[in-house]
Image (tube, rainbow, N blue to C red; front, side):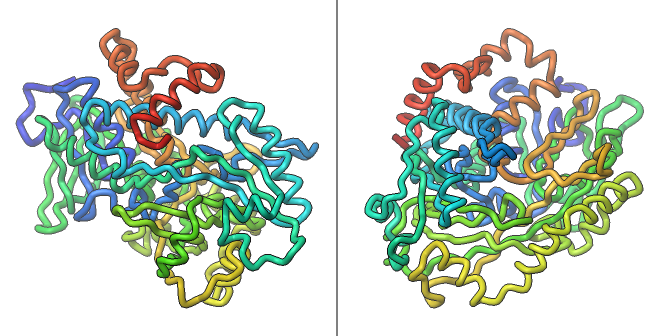
Length: 500
């Protein structure tokens, strides 16, 4: 792929737009697979991983479907669907394999900088929800990924697991919880910064902060991509040619994908959802809780708004967050423009956008209710989980901006998708990641699939296959169908990442 005849500085084999976890993961993988690749990374802000990948913006859970109830819906017959939970659990195991490889090879210095062992729990109250959680645990423990999941309704046991949540509850209140000891907290901001700092120190890799990609179009002479980049600090612009582009710009990915003009981008729209956290400022309270405790989402709420009382490690300090409280903004990025949503509306996506607006009234009503919340309303939501919570112990902080995918649907005209989707051109020369959670946690398998799609011939080569198996020892095998392999993999990565 390397174009040795190109003018230095005007060509790159690979351009990564956005200095977040997705670009970092792809860049590291490609450089490991082919060390002579030239890579340019462009980030519109002046720091790495300041948008969705940042610790206080991202969900940060290490999404593995241990505690997230939206991944295990109840079917009309009352049974629990666990397919998505198995898929996400497997994807997270693959991510851990790659991170363990990077620790073993010295690419990452200390796993403690980005991953910490924190139990994952689900907590519910009320007869109907308790019955659901019991059924969920009974369904999940049949699969080896979840065989160690504990379930309890006993108040004494629950008080051991989650003292803050049980303190002050009415005697006899119907509550239950599940407990997974092997859960993790992942600081994707710290991980991204480590990956990109190491990546940019290698020959042929250049990082440009404070640089915004303004346009992407085909060069008809050689079918490469031509990119127009503006240096926000000087106002100067430059042009760059690239063989392959990855748009990993979070909420900013959709507008850039639209500028490329590829047919595959047609019909996609975006629905922005903003968020806020309550962050605990009382160290004594923070010290009493060590778990990620997820509840059930309100009717009509998006999955990213599932309430959780969440222990996190941020820059070596333990934090306690509750939320996120959803809201609405027309920005596609936390530091974006209020015109982002309006600029994304095109002739090809008007119908899907209008259709979603018509059919998602429950979501609209939910978001309006969230926007109208007072501090007392937010405290009341927190007290459902932590009955003794005091307003004076918590401050409101702005979380990240999410852009949910809107896509064409033959039946409805348009459909709102919760999750992540990779949109790739037919020739594999440009690819963009759209959507939100569980994104970061599944970054490694998502990028492997992208490599297999966009670098087909190379990915099939003996050299790349061998390297992929070195980076991810289970590559080409199924962890979800092979209990022995899954257990051995979990044991090995747990030791390397120091989370056992």
